Length: 270
Image (cartoon, rainbow, N blue to C red):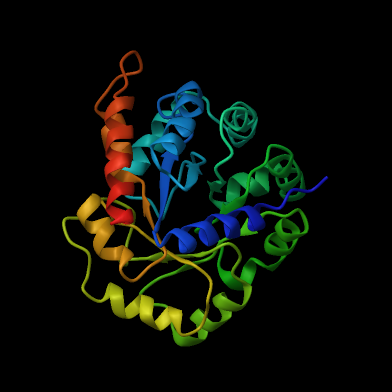
C-alpha cells in the first residue's frame, strides 16, 4: 500500500494559501544528540508551528552542509545512527504527529541501503518526500521515478547560479515544492541574505507554479519575514541546530527551540 506524500505536501501549501500565510519548514539532524531526542522534538516542532519537518540523515561527507550541520552529523554518527535507524524512528514520530516529513539524505546512504528497499521502507513509515542534494538532476531519473511510484515527493534544488535551462528542466519534474538555495555555498546561519534573492525567486517563478521554499541562511524571524515576501515557505535548520548544541544530552534546551519556532511562524503569519 503506497502513501501519497506529494498530495499531503500539496495540501499543506493549499491550506497556507487559503490562510494567506507562508510555510515554515524546520530542519533537525536525526540522532543529534540521540534518536530519542529526535522522536520527542519532531512533534514539538509541529505543535510550535512547523508546517513541514525536514529530518537529516547523518553522513560522513555532507558536502552541502556548513559547520553547524556537519558537527550535528558527526555527533549522530558517533552515536551509531544509520539510515535504517532513522527510518525505524519514524514509526515513533508518526505515532505523535501527522505533519509531513521530508528526509534530507545524501545519495550514498540510499545506495548502500538499497534504493528500492529504502523507498519501500520510507513509504512504509510514511515519509512524505526526499531531498538528495548531491544527486544531479541528470542522474536522478531512476530515483525520482521509483519514489513517485511509491507516492514520495522528490524535491529538487535550485541555486542562484542555475541557468534558465536548468530551472526549466527542474520545474518540469518538481514534486511537492522546489528548494531554492538563497546563497551559493553551504548551509549555515547568516547575518544578511543577498539582495539578489528576490530576483532569483522571480526568475524561478516564471517557470513554475510549484511552491518555492528558501533555505541556506535564514537564521531568525526578521529574515524569515523578508524572504517570505518572495517565497511560499522558508527553511530553517542551522539556527535550530545551534540552539540544540548549547545543551547537553541530560538537559536539552527544547523549550528554547520551540519558542524560537513559534517566533518564526508568527513572523510568517504577519
